[in-house]
Length: 313
Ligand code: AMP
Image (cartoon, rainbow, N blue to C red; front, side):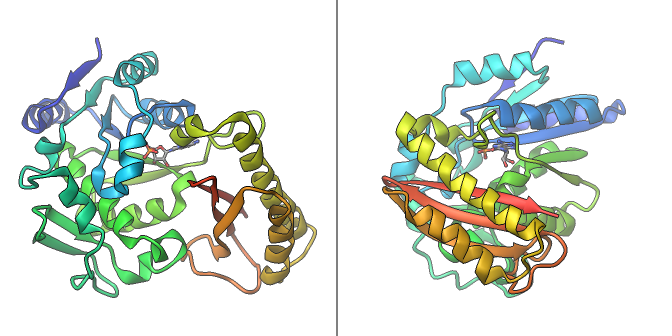
């Protein structure tokens, strides 16, 4: 069937409900747009495992600082071409008003990031009916899940992705939803959120797709010059070096970390924002390496923030 593009939440919800009523399984891939081969891998997986493939393209202002939001590289016409080629059945492409009807100005989204998170609970997800900026059904992620890795620096970013995914799940009620292991903390949080609020929905994690040179496909790669890209690759090689040390039997996390940092430090123009070795399941930092772990680094190259991760089982 020809690919459909729908902007209205109600129309999308009705369309998908009809499919579901006729016994078809719905596979869903949420995206911010700027589609690339990494997204396509998720769509292909959804195609293999479901009857209907729905993607959403929505640049969610809750997940960004204002500057990043404005500069995010995306081209809807190109996204449509990629989605069509990947055999997607429906693109849900709502406006900001459609998803957040009570927020008056775009700047209100960026104000929400400065909140004190009074509503955050240690263990449980909390749904805030409407925050003071007009964001309805705001999901506060439990502190145990956000106070690690990137969440330490910007917990609001994960409240932002949980909120939008919660809204999208409500509209679409898919059978399965696909997320990249590249954004491992987001995956861990959404997996838990789905378990809490959408128990019959299966969250599927898909390994990161990398280019031939090892850099993970990312919409933000488009912002990198050739030179910056080479630097990002060198950071990735440093993680690979860490992986080799572990495979050769090094189990002291601090030794692996300092070896990685030494390599990264010699690169000019790179600032490490955060680096750690964490347990694959709990995302908690480990001191002794055993079982599955994640090498995790967040870094800046001339103000562009990138994350690279390597899962070592
Ligand atoms: P985004 O539009 O960046 O939010 O990405 C949408 C989904 O695609 C997320 O679940 C990402 O983790 C996933 N994704 C992004 N890049 C890749 C990649 N290189 N390989 C696999 N999945 C990816």
